[in-house]
Image (cartoon, rainbow, N blue to C red):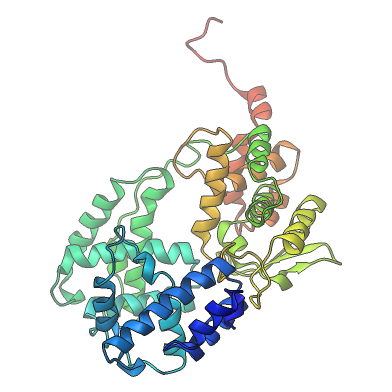
Length: 415
């Protein structure tokens, strides 16, 4: 209903008597249902009405609207800023989307056929997800490296894996590893080895080539895991206090990261049914370790989640726990968005900027606090979801007081 955007009878009558009268009513009702504010609905209706008059003046029917016609219309409007729609066309994509849903527009121009390399990457992505069960972040990182490998080996030519030598793979992995630091130095070799296993799995190369991929030397426990002090955690959490939907959402996210040590993608994947209020538990779906975990719902975390659900979360049919705070309120399902919230909170709280400052820093902090308070490595591994106690062993270095008791004097000091 146009009344969702306008209240003056004369304006409502003018819009309904225009060339797009009925579609404007449907469009306004759809935007209102998806939670758009009256100002946004007004802008969209004005832009759509103006576009309707332009179509009428030039003798076009709705069925003739395609990408080229929309581009021609936009060229008649005052030029916008780079990368933005003109102000007079703001909201026009909503109208076009509605017409496509109603099958009123011609089919979009077919996309060009995928290249052989792109098709191979698609099959490899499905293999990582459905056969290996790799986490979204792992899939993204592997695909990025494999794309660079395809470019280095074949350029724009045809993909011929049987022509690839072990030396070419070795050179690529060493070159990639030279630009990375710490644990990231192992990523190129892991990605290429995974690709070769996929190629063996699909019959494109013979078994054994994956053994040619070198593993870079890794000095275990050479550095301390990045962590925050208790005061830094509290300052970061305090950057998102308030009653706004964004503050309530981000405060709940930070508490999940800091108190339970969950991963960013685990927060992004949480759904309403994963919070068991009566049992006081949080269920984490299988991910990196392929095992479901159940963690205690601490009172502080539960109160923050309840505040967000009651006063900050938009009304929507989505079952995802965390949503964007602007219409159409899509799920906050990208782990990178969770990491960005954590990083910004740390920077706003005055923590020094450093690589990988984000969601995983809170995870390291939660683990170090458990170790320093006397928790066993088995308990820490169960909370963090580690499959191996060797992984949890990196946090032994964070019990600084215990280490100080067994440290030898530094030879450069006066003794």
